[in-house]
Image (cartoon, rainbow, N blue to C red; front, side, top):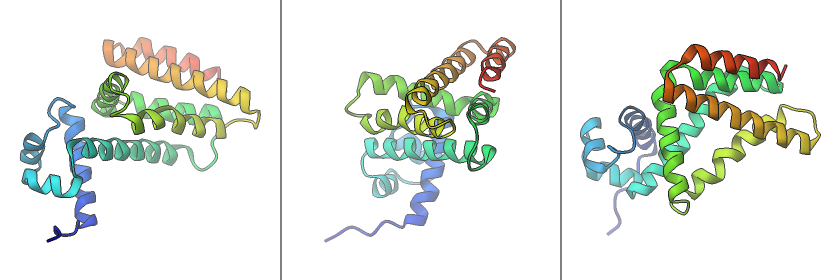
Length: 184
C-alpha cells in the first residue's frame, strides 16, 4: 500500500517553518524530535514531507539560498552593476537581523568542508550561484569578471565572518565601505 501523497502547499509552509527553526536553533538542534516539537507537529509529519534528515537539511539549504537571492535581487533590480550587486549582498549579510541566518550558513559551510559527499549540492552552489550573479553584473571579459567576482565573494564572506566572530560592527563596516568603494 502506498503512503499518502505529499501536500506540496503544506510542505512549503512546513519548510519555511523548519528553515526559521534551523536559523534560530542552529544545526545542533536539527533532529526530528526537537524540530517537530518546536513546530507543533509529529516527527512522522516531518518524515512524510522531507524524507530523511539529510534530505531535510538539503531542502533547508536550498530554501535559504532562495531567500538570499530573492532579498538581494529585490534590492538591486534586474541588471545591477558590480558595485550595486556587491553592496546589496553586503547590506543584507551584515544586517543584524540576518546574523542567525549567516551563523547557520557558516556552520553548514564548516560541516560541508568536513563531509563534502554529504553536502555536495551545497558545495556545488555556495560559490557558483554568487559567481554567476556577480559575473553577470560586469563587462563581458570572462577572465576578469571571474577574478573580480571571486575577490568580491571572498572579501564579503571574510568580512562577514569577522563581524560574526568579533561583533565589531564599526570596524568591519568601515572596511566594507572601503572595499565597496573600490568597485564603483
